Amino acid sequence: MPCSIPPEVLEYIELVESGTPRACPEQHALVAMVRKAFATEDLRVDRQQLDNYLGLQKYFQFRLFPWEKFLMALWDCTYRPDGWPRWKTLFCMVGRGAGKDGLIAFDSACSISPYNPVGHYNVDICANNEDQATQPCRDLVEVLETPKHEAKLKKHFYHTKELIQGRKNKGVMKGRTNNPKGRDGMRSGKIIFNEVHAYENYDNIKVFVTGLGKVDQPRIGYFTSNGDVSDGPLDDKLAQARRILFEGEDDGGMLPFICCLENRDQVHDPDNWYMANPSLSYRPALLQETADEYKDWLEHPEQNGDFLTKRMGLRAGQKEISVTDYEQVKATNRPLPDLSGWSCIVGLDYAELSDWAAVNLHFRQGVQRFDINHAWICTQSKTLPRVKAPWRAWAEAGHCTVVDDVSISPDLLADYIRQAAMVYNVKLLAMDHYRWTLVSESMRKIGFDANDKNRVKLVRPSDIMQVEPVIQECFDRGLFTWDDNPCLRWSVNNTKRIRSSKKLGVDTGNFIYAKIEAKSRKTDPWMALVASMVGEPVLGTGQAVGPPPMGAVKL
Image 1 (cartoon, rainbow, N blue to C red):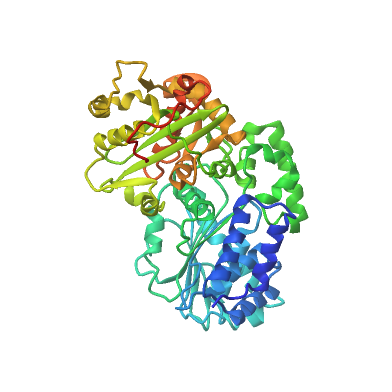
Image 2 (image 1 turned 90 degrees about the vertical axis):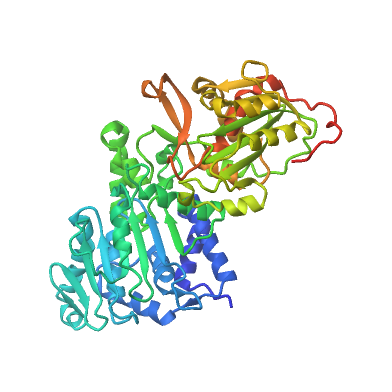
């Protein structure tokens, strides 16, 4: 049976929905997801447990803000019918100064308090350095040693400089660094990773997580501001969270709480700062500090890169930029017209035929662009287990073809193009010039030879630089129509725009495209579209030709 939303959760939902203060798209998507969960799932909120936890606020020098109560209610006190936490994993990325350490300290106190029915619920706080690992413990010790409450709290908690234990629960809160000593035999109830942005790989995360499962109701928390380590756990968690929020991927028990600006231009409006830090409304001193740092950043941006990264949730370096805003990607989801008989460019892309490949049929009518995109996925790809996207569902919907073989035969791609030529007027095949060799024989069988420059365009980085501004214009003005193709949209969000440089072989200062992460974020469908747009000049204004030939096969 659906469960009513608790007031602590509803308060924050309504704040976000009201737009006062402003909230980022990730927050709007999150509250919509939570509303849907309560409306459609059989959930239970332990009201007594939540009231008891929140009652501990009287011992702290601060009161939880609405966003913090929202998280605690969902992460700690909302359950499935089998008693398992509905949201076992919390991913929380907020701007510096929001109060992550204070929230971790309060939440940990709740977890080892007599109000947690799961005994021996150890809380291990992990970080790359000792200060980040132990700061929440020090914050809680300060509360326990407050003269006003010390005598009463001593009855319920025992503490030393290194750990805090709930006397009744027997759970221990302890800060742990990446030193491997002492990890064996860990019996964690809750693992909290503090400042995830500092992790370069999963080596230590995996070791800590293996301590879960020995205690009921295990939970994991990832708390962080943004950071400068690319392609690490933070980027993976952000990508997963955004797939959940925007692509409809099953959350798998993750509660994705992301606060950040959408782009660099937004930083110049102070009303947008609240999008990155949900605590600003309640901390005037923090707001003033943020304003002071903003002024310093304007005068010396090269010396104050942390302002964008830590305060606003944006990577300070502008070497990597997303292709476009996600709202503009979603706007491509419009029904395609009947394109039978129209002229088109075929774009083909793959990095390795033992991984993914894609073909894009690109049409134009005036300024409007229309694309039919299809991908092939090799099930024996070594990197496929790292791909978290719902590719099997995409295959069932017809957006991609699963190839159970050691590689994707070029003949499969050629046959798709051959059938397309029976429905559409294929004017040109465009693909990366380095990739032609592996598919050349199959392409020649269907009439495409690289020696014929009128039929085949071998695309170079300089070609992509020329068409990139056209692509941006198409996104900005809503000129793309792709139908409902989540596989193509996903691949766009796996791509970054980077400025050319001598290191890349071309030094013009223009943009080219690259993968955000080499192994788990496939870009082949998108790059097939890019290749097809390189050949746009042969379409002219893209007027439709006559009716499709007899015996046409509809793709």
